[in-house]
Amino acid sequence: MEISPPLGQVSLESVPDMELLFEDIRSAGDEPWKIIVWAMGDDFEKYESTLTIDPTIDTYDCLTKLPEKRLYGLRLSDEGQHQTIHTVSVEHDITIIRLTATANKEELLARFPSRDAVAHLRKACLERNRRFELLNLYKEKSVKKDGGLESRYGITTGQKEALLTALEKGYFNVPRETTMDEIAEELCISTSALSTRLRRGQQALLLNTLA
Image (cartoon, rainbow, N blue to C red):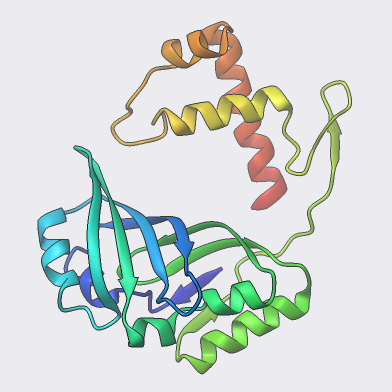
């Protein structure tokens, strides 16, 4: 689903090619929500300078600096607290699987316990003057494949291991931070076997999520 405008829109508009990948979202008691995000794809210094004037951000910390990306801790201001939908997610047991943000929108992949939870999230967005667009809705199910192994997305244990290892090692980053030979060596399989697992795993994920 897509939600707009994104939190931190003022700072993101200054770096239109930047993408944020949400790593963690936390709040202790009555403390303001703190969001941990990976930022990639644009001018980090410019982004940091506009964070100081973004009305939805109170303070920020740069936690990790890498050549192609940086990890930030963003503490929300009162306005950011009002705009966030994370309180609604907690209240209605909505599990965030993946959340990204650009200057125009947030893209959310989440697990909802019921259709009512979807309706509550939509209502919360509209109450905050944020657009809510549901792009796809599907029901998770166990799929029997590869000798009876179960996977809610239709992938085998080997394919899951290959995909997650490739993701963690930066194989899908631009530019790539590892090679298939290195991943195959870590998994103790041939490069050909790794290539097959990655292709079939990606195909299964697409068929069971987007198709």
